[in-house]
Image (cartoon, rainbow, N blue to C red; front, side, top):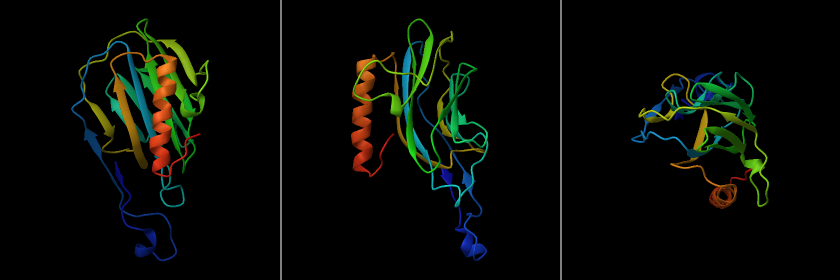
Length: 189
């Protein structure tokens, strides 16, 4: 969702930061109104700070007013905002990939897991929550990136379910995700 632009050394020899980058937002047709849901998103800030410095608030995904995942300042952590409530930030190192799973059950309890917490055993340890966040999702479309502060990296996986997946289902989904990313040479924590 971000065009890094022109390599810096083509513009000014000896520099590594790329020049003339462009942000993009891709509005998807996904505009479901949901109560219980599970969202799995895998991404990586890439290619690293030497080529393109981090920007505060880089947006991975945004379903206006419903779910937003964005960079926490300049830190290598990502805020999860659900229905206007900031649940907190989850670390994913720059130059690496990670996955966030945001699950809301029928009782409006929102829990966030990172990929390192979902292995092959129970219980799962949440990175954030559970926090009670009432209100159904609106019919706003899901947007990847942002026209002014898009993710400087790669969005690799995105899945949205219209129900809260069970812990066992999350383990299964993450094992599939790990296998798929491993075939592309990406190792998840």
